[in-house]
Image 1 (tube, rainbow, N blue to C red):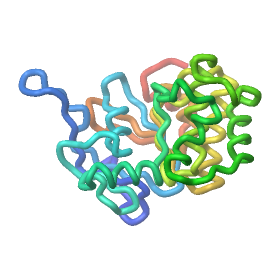
Image 2: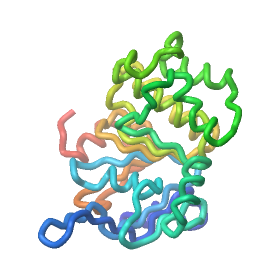
Image 3: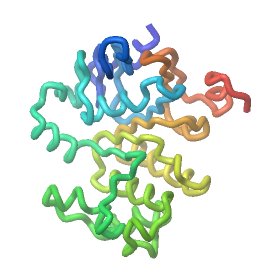
Length: 249
């Protein structure tokens, strides 16, 4: 099977085993994931691609513990998170997982700086101001630390969300279209940050993207169709990804 190359039982930061997730009932039931088995090795960068409705975001939500599958198991560092009570799952997500959401999920009343450090404050950890400042600079927000979300563009709000997810150097970072709202230059900088998280700090990054250029920064690209893994490419070029997607580059 195609997925066997990615199933590394003893070295997976995240492992999905026979995961199925459906929505609706009866005639309206839709299978977003169909018995998906895949492992994301520690210290790796994986891009997930596929057409709209292929199950990309559902895979990310199940893998990160934001959604629970109907069947199968999701293991993070060996722990089956599908069986954890909600309170324990919330602590695990807070302490070991970072998520970059498409919807940003910023607190409107807080400044960019305050939004970035919010998870650390909730965990009663003191963030390093120098590290916060460096992250905000790296995502292009130097000088805007005191701005609230309403005073920032959509792209700038996305950068705040990215800095927030990176701050605690989580074991696993899930990113849903992290460069979708960014200009080309800032997008390159964000991808460089994700690459540095893997190469410099040994973090595991799983990124959903529609952009072949972004996906080409990953170690592995996984393709989904109709809730199933249909192909895997190792260190492909943007052209190879474009051809696999059926586009012309």
